[in-house]
Length: 212
Image (tube, rainbow, N blue to C red; front, side, top):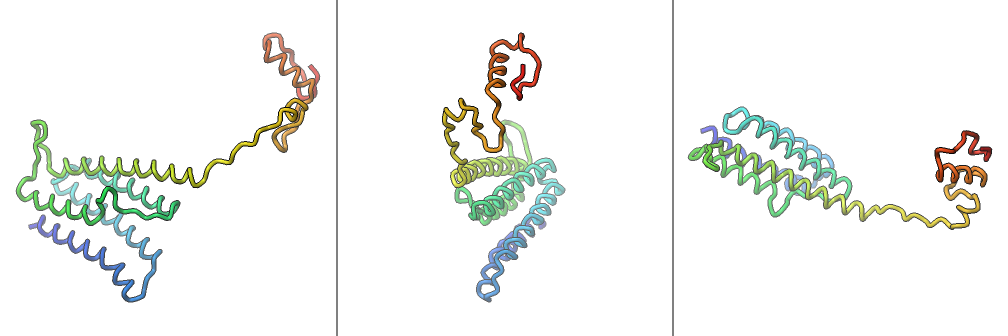
């Protein structure tokens, strides 16, 4: 009975999550920043309760539930950072989004009524442990691929400034190529050159003043 109720509540969650934005647009009460913030904060707390409940229910190991929660938050952080830095909000990857994930979770919950365990390589595991590990790995890999793509996009949008070539006469004539840096006198440069050629015979002295 609890599994059936959980599936029904997932349907209610999907309905409410899909309806709130549409209802605001119909009524003309759109508040994009408020809605975005509240919606995803509630999603974060909802995922904590969902995976916490699974970890305590016996249908999923607590360690697997914790790993899946970390992978979910990693994916969420990547999405929100991309929204802020690139102005692109993407919730679906490889044609799988929140709706598809709810459908998969609902189907797996119903399957628990018949097959609560899965057999892999001759060993028996909890069905949700197998699904949780697969989901965590997929979320982590998706977050990594998305981060690499977004990093490349940001690097292309904000390239490093090109270094200007320093004229040879500026270096040889004792003029510092860097603004604000005092050039060394010719005698000091000669002393440094001698030390580089034979550091064991170098003598101490005021190099910057040109006195060996």
